[in-house]
Image (cartoon, rainbow, N blue to C red):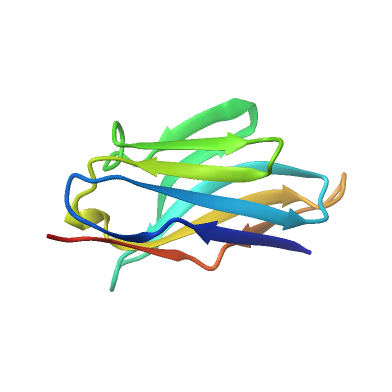
Length: 120
């Protein structure tokens, strides 16, 4: 079984920074795609940043130049550095992983979410 645990959320003022982390634990063959999503109140969950195989990274247009996704292959963690935060970044942020549980099988797993609130 695979577990993802996020940390690092909180309340900040506009222009400040936060760093989210997501740690994967359990028994698995490999972590393939790692991504961060967010869901604001009364809005659909949206992709924020993704790192796929080969360290290819992509970002939502709204966060390009402000957010950076990175992973530590040794520690099975993925982080999201968020700079120049704005009120519209307020949401619950979720970590998602595509995990190869065996050589032949893979599945998608979600963390429990961490709240990020940006307000003055």
